[in-house]
Length: 149
Image (cartoon, rainbow, N blue to C red; front, side, top):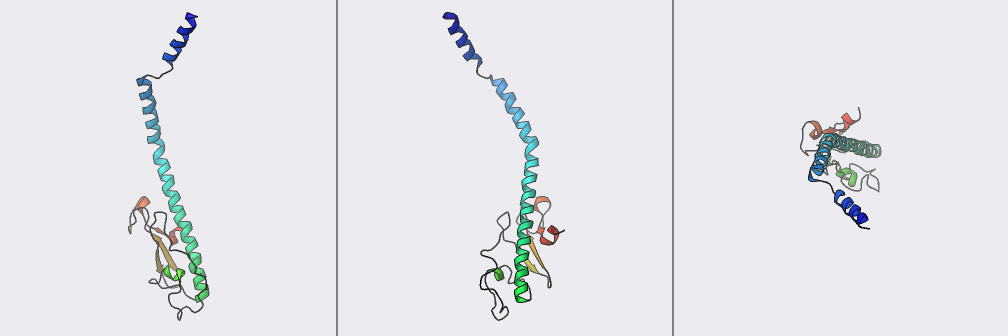
């Protein structure tokens, strides 16, 4: 009976990890995170940019419906507001009874899109991750015309 107790006690002492073993595991996990995390961040940023392009394509279709009903795209100054409510009933007498949009659209970074009327075409812009005009890399502006290429 005494020998069985010794075996159990001896097993319990060996069940724990030493501080050195824990430090080695932590270092290995840290190295793995350092190698994998940048790739995941790039993937997340690209997914946001792709989502913005999809949203802009949908907005373009709504502006196209507006043009189909009214003969022209809204002026730059009227922008997205023209999709929410009729900016000028005299200018747009064929405006739908139901708005083209329910709320003001925002990009993946919760920033409003920019609308430009270019005559017979339009441009929709997202300022990207930095939320400012211009930028490089993930902070670069995203334009509908570039998404469609």
